[in-house]
Length: 275
Ligand code: GLN
Image (cartoon, rainbow, N blue to C red):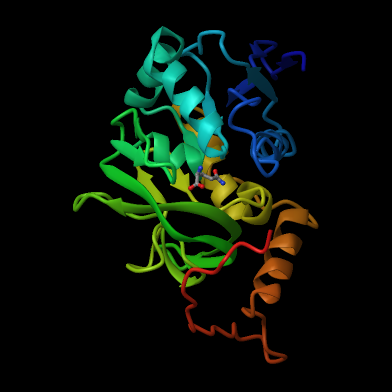
């Protein structure tokens, strides 16, 4: 997208959202997160573009945001190997510097200390988050509903064998109301650490959860110094809001005719994968 001239004719460089190693960390359409984020910025008048950061090229540190998708065990291990080497130096620096980042499933795992996969391999992580993951028991598969600290409900689907435990000081992204989340036991889902958001939710998660997408979009604009653009205005006929309600209802969190949200908090244990 070409820069759009502002009122004083100063061109605004587009927000650049990088998709990290899409051919390795691209399970379940997670690249859609970058597309949704760019779209939600553009419709508010902020030029934005999605940049594919394909392995094994080194990842540049200067992008406005980074999106890391899920990955099957072997591809995840290949991605980690590169991310721990010179190819990952830019991403590690960007994360340490507080770049807005979304990491989904396998990428949540690889930001931690270690992932013990189902074949018993010890895959070292990037040590950027105080968490550990061990693959054990049946895979966690199905719809998830979680509640963020401000009350926002998150919807997504999960499919993972790894069970993640957060270190004592780490804040989860939400509390699980339905499904498994980080481990199916302690009701935690994901991680929120500064501008870094990590989650087990696919969907893609930003398509299903406009409030989460706008949280990241707001962080991006704040870092660029576009503070007068915040809070972001609502989008007319927001397709994200429609999808959000539809998926919550599908998981049994619908609205009653009189408008109150019906929360059923029955939790299920890990379920076997159907395939
Ligand atoms: N390989 C990881 C697991 O099965 C992550 C899967 C994923 O990213 N969906 O736990």
